[in-house]
Length: 291
Image (cartoon, rainbow, N blue to C red; front, side, top):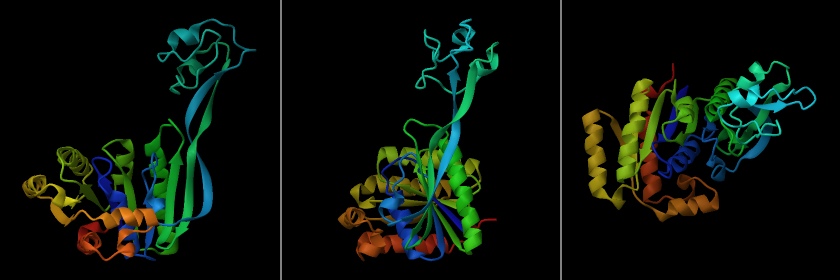
């Protein structure tokens, strides 16, 4: 199976448009994962039909039983986050779920229960099964949720006999990115010709090297600043990172999102043509094969 993780060092580079187009180009061979669980939007261009909904529980919050509480004040003294109020209740906004008060309470007055952190879904699309998720407002453990939906997608790919797993990864270099990237066959890093794009490209490529994941680079909207594009190309040559392609600015990409379609399905314009070339290049490389 070929496992392709599309990531970016920053948001707004166009990775979801590429991931959706890749899914359209490899239709019926793929299982899709939207690993940007904090702001999932691959569903905007894949027209999913929901099949299953599952709860995700990964966080814990403390709660004080007023009938058992003796107001000894130990929990307030130990809580580093100021979550225990003067009335000896737990402020759920301030509570970080560390569990210190639960373990320290000499009267057994504090419970420490799992809370609903979000939901994950299995949907059908014209391009294959989509496994996606929605983390609750201000909830944490997004990396754990990414791991859960990625593992489910691998399982479904095996059951369905699919050849390609396409992961639309989250932006940045944090825990959810690591969860989407670690152990992948390879990564396609989407960047843009800006100073912040170039800087964050360096950071995300360092993460790829750390986890020994082969990476290629795609420069989106390259013609908006050809000087910065040339600098990124020079950087890729110095770092011996393959440049998979350069995609020009094309208003049809935005129009395709408005129509809820991958750009390669919506138009045969310049951006769509280059996306096809990028796909043909990366899918043919032997190091994309997982395992």
